[in-house]
Amino acid sequence: MDKEKEQPTVDQLFIGVDVGGTNIECGVVAPNGKIISRSYCATLVQDGVDAVIDRIADTINEAIAALPVSERRQIAGVGVGIPGMVDPVNGISLNAVNLGWRNVPLAAKLTERLHIPVKIENDVNSYVYGEAVYGAGRQFNYVLGLTIGTGLASAFIINGEVFGGAGHLAGEIGHIPFDDIPYVCNCGQTGCLETIVSATGIARQAADAVSNGMDTMLARLLEQQGSLTARDVSIAHEAGDRIATAILNRTGIMLGRALAAIVPTLSPDVIIIGGGAAQAGEALIAPLTSELRSRLLPIFAERLQVRTGELGSNAGIIGNAMIAKFSANN
Ligand SMILES: [Zn+2]
Image (cartoon, rainbow, N blue to C red; front, side, top):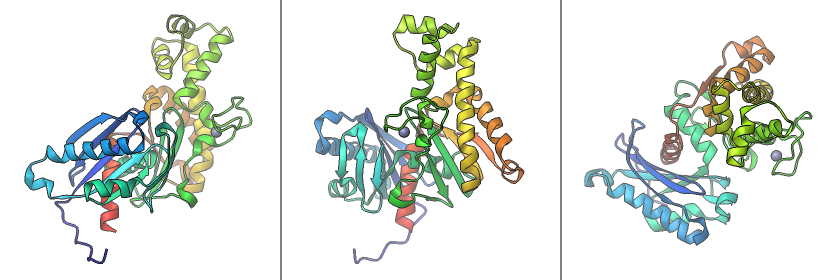
C-alpha cells in the first residue's frame, strides 16, 4: 500500500476471532477492552478449508452488523487465533491439526472477503496476550502465561509484544522432557511434561491409579462412565479422595519443576495459569507455587507473582483484537 498509514484514533474498534475445532467465536472489542458485540457458529471442519473461511467471514460480518451504523465504520482490523503453528508475518496457518489445515493463507483469504486488515496468531499466544493487556498481567511488562488444556503450552509477552522466537515456535513447554515421566507423548517422545501436566495427563494418571488397584472413588466413576476426565479428578478431590488430591499435587509439582528452569531463563514479572485444567484451582496451583518458589533463587522468588487468568474464555477474543490493534498502530 502506498497510502500513508492513518493515524490511530481512540475510537478504533478491533475484532477478535477464536477458531477452534468445534466453534468459531467472534467479538468486537472496544478501546476499554470490553466486548461490545458477539457472534459465533460451528466450525464444521469436514466442509473443507474454504467453507470454514467463509463461515469465519460470515461470523465477523454478523458481529459487525449488530453494531450501530456509526460504529461499523470504526472497525480497523481483525485478529484471528488458530490452534497450531502460524506465520504471523505472512498471515499463514502453517499446520493446525484440529482443523486439518496446512499452509492456508488465511489472512489474505479473509482480507479478500472482508476488506479489513487481518492478522493471525497462535491461539495460546492470543490467550496470553489478552490476559497481558486486560487481565491478570495488565500491570506487568514481562508476562509468561500457560494454558493447561488438552495439551500444555505457553507464551511470553514482552512490553505488549509476543515473543515468537525463531519460526514463531517459542513456548512449546509441553514437550520439555523429564527422565522420570514414563508416558509416551503424541509427538513420539517419551517423558514430555504434557503427558502429565494437561487435562489428558490428569485423566491418564487417574486411569493409572485405578488400574494399579488404588482405593479411590475414581474407580467407581470409571466403572459408571467407562472413562475418566480431569474434571472427575477435581470432583473426587473436592469429595476428599486422597488419590485424586495426590494426582493434582503431582501435576502441580511437575509444572513447578519445569517453571523453575524457565523463570531464571526469562525472568517474567508474572506467571498466569489458564486453560480448562487450571479450574482444578488451588489443588494444582498451591503445589506448583511452593515447588517453584522452593527451587528459585530469592531474587526471582521475591518478585515473581503466580496468578490465574481473569478473562476466562474471553481472553482469546480480546487478545486477538489487541494483536490486530498492535499491528495497526506499529
Ligand atoms: Zn511431546
